[in-house]
Length: 126
Image (cartoon, rainbow, N blue to C red):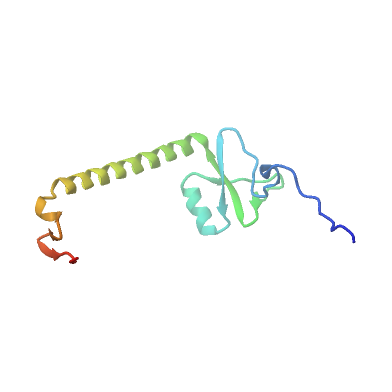
């Protein structure tokens, strides 16, 4: 009986063999963008530009195009997103607290029979 052959495996780190990994450029934030003219145009309106290879063609990884924007612009946009999320969470939290303060005893369950929002609810009997 012969032993089954085991194929050699790639022992390099994931980042070394990741085909979507792109070289970074100091001072710029790069990202992969779906290779769709409409999506590329949207990203250009946000300040991104297509990264060019030495031969002048676009830097492509599978079905994505590599685009970059200055790091300062990227950081400012990210900070604005975080601030907006925090503002929305705070508004939601204030809204929930205000709603809870308006709850009266008649709105809560009392034993097997309760009244919620002015509607009587009969509990199941045992």
